[in-house]
Length: 293
Image (cartoon, rainbow, N blue to C red; front, side, top):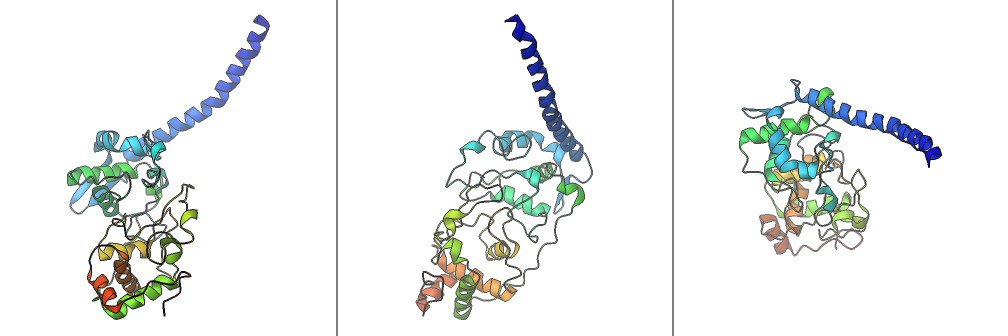
């Protein structure tokens, strides 16, 4: 037994040597985050409210950490239990990649984008609306979220996209929107009737590789809001980190409004566009995504 002791001790020392860098790296990462938190850059500005990240730690720990994790990496204690239909997994703030933005794809969201997401929540997910928080608390949480990613040290939020005035919904626009839905192949994920059963639906994953479901227009509201303007933003900015791309290079602003109106016809609740589609006896796309005759 004594002859084995030196070998065991040596092995333990080696294990400790190799474990130390990993521990040190974790400490450095947390140290860096603490330094970023106390720089002038890690604040938020929403309207007349200035958020201070250092004032949000307790609220984050109480309400957000269980899902998003102490380090903001989306690995909180509850993250392992996120399964369909309660996808997606919690957001990894360290990447600085966010779905709900008013800014072009690949750019950082504005402080107001993050502020609105906190208050709105994410429908059909574990992210509830935190609209009972005061404006100051939400602004502080925005600043706290920003301190997790180094992107905010070197990048500014993208410029919000320009959204032209919403035109009047007409029969011609509804039919034109269906043509756009067919042409840019929305049906491949969302299905020809918007039931999220397109041929690609079961194969989709987010950027980290987690399975993700396309939006079903017959269930609930889109995760980034349900106004016409918010629908417009969704497919003109894309949902970064997901298979939903930006179509800003593929469709013109007028066509984007046409698509908004057609998407309203797929939803289960009443709308003027849906009334028009019913009056037109508008048929769904063919199973191959082509326009009905």
